[in-house]
Length: 93
Picture (tube, rainbow, N blue to C red):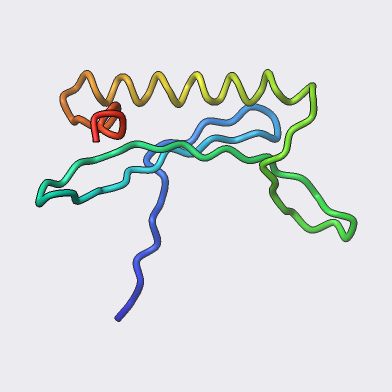
C-alpha cells in the first residue's frame, strides 16, 4: 500500500521563516471535523552547507514569525467564513 504524503494547503514566507497550514480530519463520536493547524520553521544552512530547519528563533526573527502567523490566522478565518468549519473546530471539540 502506498502512503500518500500530505501537503500544506497554504504556505507563507518572510525571509528564512515559513509557516505552513495543514488540514486535519478528526473523527470523534462518529462525526468528522476539519481542523486547520499551522507549523512554523526557519531554514538555514548547517556547518556542512546543507539546508536544514529549526523551530527556534532569535530576537530579530520574532517579527517574521509574527507576520507569517498573522497571515496564517487570516487564512484560517477566511476559510471559516466560507463555511468550511475548519477554524475554531478544535476549540469546540
